[in-house]
Amino acid sequence: MTTSDRPLECAIVGGGIHGTYLVQRLLEDVGLERADVAIVDPHDGLLESFRRKARACEMAELRSTFVHHVGTDPFGLEHFAETRDREDELLPTPGYPRRPSLSLFLDYADDVIDGHDLEALHRRATVETIRDDGELVLETTDGPIRTRHCVLAIGHGGRYRRPTWADDADAVHVWDGFDPDERADGTVIVGGGITAGQLATCLSGREPVTLLTRHPLERAVTEADPRWINWDHVERHLHAHPPGSRARYEVVCEARNDATLPPYLHDRFESAVDAARLAVRRGEVESARTVDGHVRLLLEDGGCVTGDRVVLATGFAPVFEHPFVDRVTRSLDLERGYRGMPVLADETLAWRRVDGSRSRLFVTGALAAGTVGPLAGNVAGARRAADRITRALAADGLEAGIHERV
Image 1 (tube, rainbow, N blue to C red):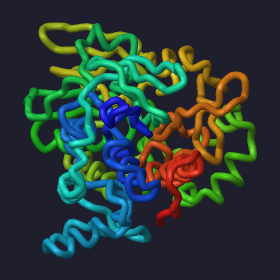
Image 2 (tube, rainbow, N blue to C red):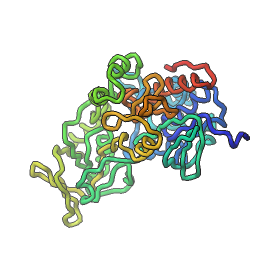
Image 3 (tube, rainbow, N blue to C red):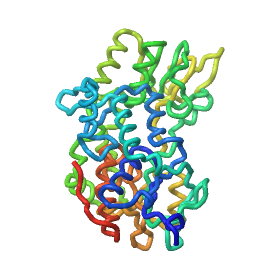
Image 4 (cartoon, one colour):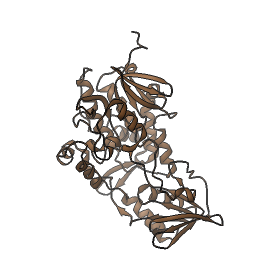
C-alpha cells in the first residue's frame, strides 16, 4: 500500500477553533505525522466561520482569557502580544485575568496557522455521512476519506434558531446573511444574550436601535463558573450522573450563564440606553407584518415594536438535533441519550455504540457538553477535550508521550 492509499490515522470534521487546536495536539502529543491527519471543512480557510460571526456582531474583544486560544502553548498569545508591543490589547477585567482584543486573538491565530502550515492539512469538503467498513469512511463532496479514527468538531453547523413569525417579518439572523455595514433608519434586534447586546450597542452609535428581549439583561463575567474548566470539578458534579442522562443535561443547562452580558459590555450597553441611543423593550412576539414599508412586531401583551428591519440574535438550533449528527448516528449505530445527547465514554470522549462497545468516533465542542460540561463549546473546552482525546488515541496503539496542558 502506498502512502497516498494508506488511510489516515485521524480525520477531524470541522475547521473551527476546536479542530485547529486539536490537530496540533495530535502532531505534538500523539506523535502523528502530517500525512496521518486532516481537517475536513467546507470553508476556504480555517476559523472562517468564527471570523464571519465575529464580524457580523461587531465583536471587539474575547470573553475568554488570554491563555485560551488556538495555540498549544498557554502563554503563546501573551508572548505574541509582548514581542509586538501590543500588550494594550490584553484587556483588564476586575477580578479576572486579562482578555485579548479580537484583532490580537485572530492575528495570533493566523501566526499559529501559518507557522505550522495548518492550511496544508485542510481538505475543503463537506462531510455528508460516515460509515464503517473496518475503517471509518467519510463520505464527502470531494470523494471518500478513509481513516482509523475520526473526531467530530462541528460546532452548531450553521443552524440557527428562527422563531415561527420571523419569515413574516423578513427577519435575517445575525449569523446568516446580516451585513453590519448596511444602514437602516431603525433596527429591531431580537435576543437577550451577549450577541444581541454587542450588536445593539454597536449599531446604536449609527442608527436608532430597539432591543426586544424576553427577560432583563443580567451580568456575568464568564459563560459558566471557571471551576468547570477543571476535570476534577466536572467529574464530581457532572460525571456523578449516568452518561447521556437527563440529569447531566440539566446540570449543564443550570451551570451555563446564558443570556448574560459581561460587565464591560453591560456598562457600554447601559450607557447607550442612558444616552437615548438605544431602547429596550420586554416581551414575546406573537406575530409580525409589514405596514407601509416598516416591520411591525405584535407582542403577546398587546404592544408592538416597529422598525425598518429585524435582526435575530436568537442563538443556535440544538446541535444534538443536527441532521448530520442524525445520519452519522444511524450509520454507525451510536447511542444517544436525553434529547439526543451523545453517550460518550467520559475518559476518552469516544461515542459509544448501542451495543455498549466503544467506537472510533470521538467528539469535541458543543456536541460533547454532556461529558466536558458547560464550557465544552468554547476555547477552554477545546483544550480540555483534547487532553482526553489525544491520550485515548495514544493508548490505542499510537505513539505515547501525552501530558495535560494548563
